[in-house]
Length: 85
Image 1 (cartoon, helix red, strand yellow):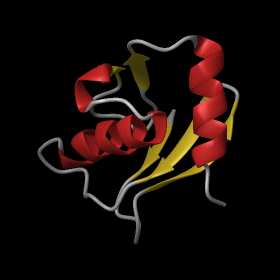
Image 2 (cartoon, helix red, strand yellow):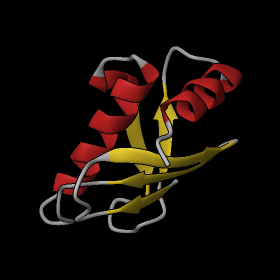
Image 3 (spheres, one colour):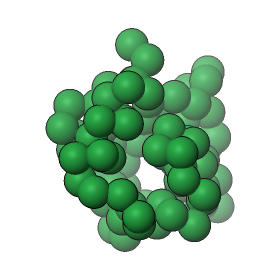
């Protein structure tokens, strides 16, 4: 997963398999971008925010998230549908 903070609008830009690029309106200050990332992914996956957890990369643009309650295939399908070029 690659996060791009300080975008005009938060959205999933590209989702190819498990490689996901997310634009975030929040700045990378005090965890705001990470919180926004979790919110964007949870909305795209139709999960509550507690269903998506940042596992690695808290201070990096490259991140790893855990998704609870969905299969890997379902995550891939939902993120691909949510991607807005």
